Image (cartoon, rainbow over all chains, first blue to last red; front, side, top):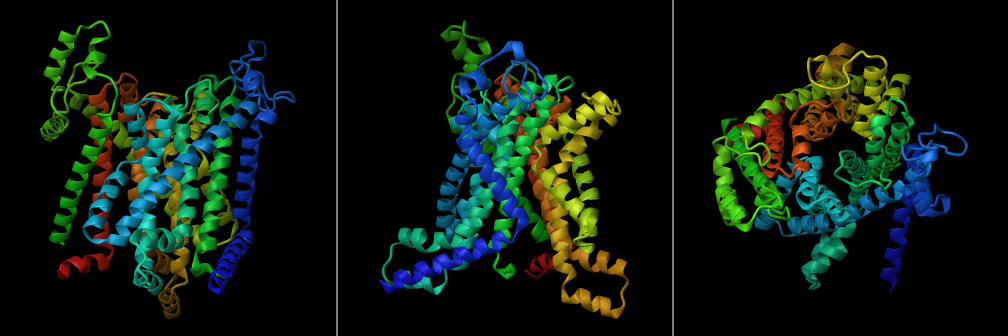
Length: 292
Length: 310
């Protein structure tokens, strides 16, 4: 019982230490604040603007209006409110990238854990496979999968998960290699703990830090990939308000209504920027070399 | 050294084979019948079966893959479903544009990113440092196609300094290359700065300074040389990102490279062309990484000695 309490206290202090270091990093806090704001807007999107009337409903009487008090970011070629579409677009971008990163982390961690823990032939085969996947640029990989399987949200998520999975496999593997010969793993094995349990309970928790950093940065990069694919007409299809899709639709009107490109572009940039700032900050906060 | 090169070459062949298998597998997941697609919905089953036999589509998966590899080795990537012309010729005609764009972007990123990174590190926390770090952060976060659209709007459509679309002269490559280089430029600047900062505080740099070595010498010979490894790594890795990104940027500026070919072929469901284009880009990327690994051995005596002994 007392051992359990002890570890709980230690864990909390470790976390609060990291939080303390993160809080002193102004840029990271800016990133966190921005991301929280975007998440809040995404969650309360329906309260802010009605989906059916403002986001997908057309209103030709009010088409191509420049930004005003009524339409903060103006209206697009179908008279839809750009601000409302951007807010609702954050739902698509965030949920797609979060879900695909969760899949990538889960599958990648398993592969990396098995590879690092067992070593030898298994490690060789799995890591060469990951090398091959890594040798295909993420953008091309996503394009190929979407091209082969067809344009749908599920395929898009699959494509992103597959493209980013090898990175996580590598991160987990290297963390495992650094802890697997330590005494607490040997102790667990001596107690007769199964391999699966050792990996899940004793090894993976030690790799959580680098995984969170990597996932934060990969989320930013996946938002860029999603919007690029949509911009090329291979991601989310109109009339859904995805940011890349909005840019695709606004592209032909860029000379007369540049705000149709600027606002969705800024939305992508701000979300990616906040994730990058947060990821960098987390990396520094988790880096034992930079302690104090 | 020769042993290292050979070993690395063997590994690359293996990786390329693996990639070709993955790409072939993905492309074969395409639902629907390719022969039916070429002939249209009105074709009767006999015609479809005849074309299938002609294209070898009735063979089992591994036979088809094997035939694809044999053909690819001879420069035969089959014929386009759409134009019925050899895929290889079309790829070869488009490839220089993409390679030229990617190389220009990479050169620009290196020529700007590395010096700015070095200056930022030397003058840490100065105005130059702060401005370049903020710019790098923005460049890394702005999607390349948005930047492309904005550059196109201001420098091509409004100021008319450069052509907005097409690839008629080198001038047409200026805006796309700038657009494409932004992300890598940002990574390189940040990477150069942080490695330089690590190296600047090293003991041997202090020793050099104590010996009275000039500041210029210290920065170039003692610091930058040691910071070179991570820089070269970034250049290698980001070449893939740039090649992937060129697919998007080519379509923004209507450059007729592999990227635009890839996108139109995907729309037309022209699988042989898609496969060949993806293969070409990925193999180029692998070759660049091979070159990077060899450069490693060249600039890092530690890597070199590992192999000269054995």
